[in-house]
Structures are given as C-alpha cells and as structure tokens.
Amino acid sequence: MHDTLASLVERAVMGSYRPLEFYLREQSRLPGPRANLELVNDVSSLLAATVPKYPDKVRSLLDYFANGNRKMVQSNTPAEFVMLCGIVGYGECAAVYAPWRAEVQEMLKHYACSSYWRIREAVTMGYQRLLDADMQGTLAYLMQLAREGSLLQQRAAIAAVAEPMLLVSQTMIVAALEIQRIALERLHGIAAVERRNEDFRTLKRTLGYTLSVVTAVNPEEGFALMRACAVWNDADITWILRENLKKKRLAKFIEDTEGVSQLLA
Image 1 (cartoon, rainbow, N blue to C red):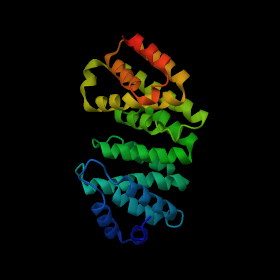
Image 2: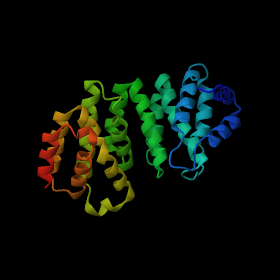
Image 3: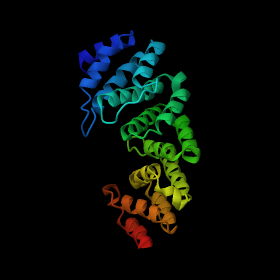
Image 4: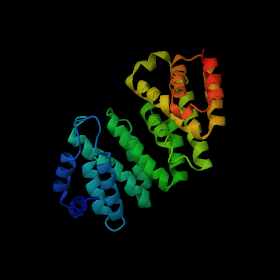
C-alpha cells in the first residue's frame, strides 16, 4: 500500500478531505470499463484500521464520500468512484467496529436501490465485508431482505452470498441457497405486466449467475432446486436456469446439468 495513500487517509481522518478526494478521483480509472477496485480496497482497509480510535472522524469522512447529502452524481465518473469508496468503506469499517453494523446494513439497503450498477456492486462488496465479520447476523438480515425487500434489494442479497471465498461453512452454504430459492420463488410470482421494468431485468440477470455459484459448492441441493424450478413453465425462470447451466463452474456435473436441460426442453 503506497505511503502517499496512507498519508492522505490520515490527513482526511483529521478533517482535510479534499486531498484524498482529489487523489481518488485522479486514480479512479473512470470514465472507463473498470474502476480501480484495488484502490477501493486499500482505502477501505486503511479506514478500517483507524475507525476503532477515531470512529466519529471516520464516520464523517465516509458520509462525505458516500454522498450522504444525496447530491446527484453521474455514472462512470470520478465522482461515482468516490461514492464507491465511501460505501465499501462503511462495510469494511462496520466489519471491525460492531456498533456500526445495524446502521450500515440499513444504509446499504438504501444504496441497493441505485440505478447505477457500480453503486449496486459496492453494496454487494459492503455486505460481503459484513458477512466475513458477522456471518450469522448478516445472513439473517440478508434473508429478510430476500423475503421482503424490493427487486433490487433482493438482488443485493443474492449477489452478496454468491461469493466462493465466503461459501466455506455449511451454515453459509445452506443459507446462501435458501436466499436463492426465496428470490426465485418471489420472481416466479411476479405478474407478467410487472416484469417489463428494468429492476426486474436486473434481478433476473443476477440470478442468471448466482445460482450456479452456490450450486457449485452444494450440488445435491442446488440441482434439486433447479429441477424444481424447471417444471414451473416460466419463461424467465427457464432463462435463468439455462444461463446458470452454461457456467464453467458446473461443467463437471454432467449428469445433473443434462437432467435439468432435459426438463427444460
């Protein structure tokens, strides 16, 4: 981690926000196809190391970066990158500073509804930081989000748990598949006229890969869920299943993938 960044973060925590903000904008790689996520992670880690000593100061900085005043920013711009740093930073800091966790969960829930895909990805990263620190509490929250949240909030829940590095304990694996099941059942119940909006398409596209991530680590239950969904005769569910069956991570499960494909034929 570059000494310059560490120095800028230290100054920002002490109240001098602008030098760090200018640095983040300059190094954002936006506009462009891929934001500088390495820098997002580095800034988040530095702030997380500082938050136990200066929680109020770090909070003020993160609120400034996460656009707490709700000013409009444009997508694919350095300003959006600064928001990413604030949102992911909140997740990272709450992971090490427990008093923030409940509030940060709610903040991420708000940002999950953003029309900007990078902001939604920042929400996913934030929840994943919380899962790594407090699996049980965060899973319970994401389960509720899957059951009761909006389409984009459901999207945040299914994406957050579809991370191979987190899918190592049986508790996490079982809960991750249950969250996929809940989202699939809710999507299946949506009326045709309501399936035309962009939020529905966003959730559908996300389910087009998350189910295979979870199934790869829990093939018996994952393919059982796919087989159950395959007989619903729902065109959108069929698309989701076919997209997941294409993923290389499922290629070794030949018998299972062929069985689901036959049901969809």
